[in-house]
Length: 170
Image (cartoon, rainbow, N blue to C red; front, side, top):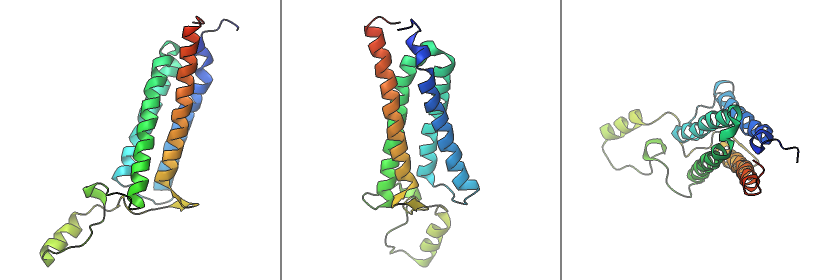
């Protein structure tokens, strides 16, 4: 080994996490502003995980001494994003109910005035409607896959740093 601190050796991998998080958010905003696909509430929640990942990975990249623990936090962040993506995809496939504030109502047994009030209060974008898909996978599904992959990379970085600490290469 060259004697370089492991945290400095991890910087290129952390840069991948940072770049991928930025790319995913740019893609989401591209679908929104260029493609005209407005996000639902669950879509916006999924974006939060990437904003946090950008912040955390930027700190880890700029301050290599923090990289070991920052990557542990990134694992949790990306797994949370993957969980949100899986939940959202399940709502789209009707495997389980979504948030009451962003799912289409089932049946209705109220008065016409109550129905009109419910329609006017309903969100514009519903979480249980697939806005776009490719090969049968929605954007929420792709988010789950991407977040899982990034969590695996962050875990590998964390475990590699831990192994270096155990073997005294820090």
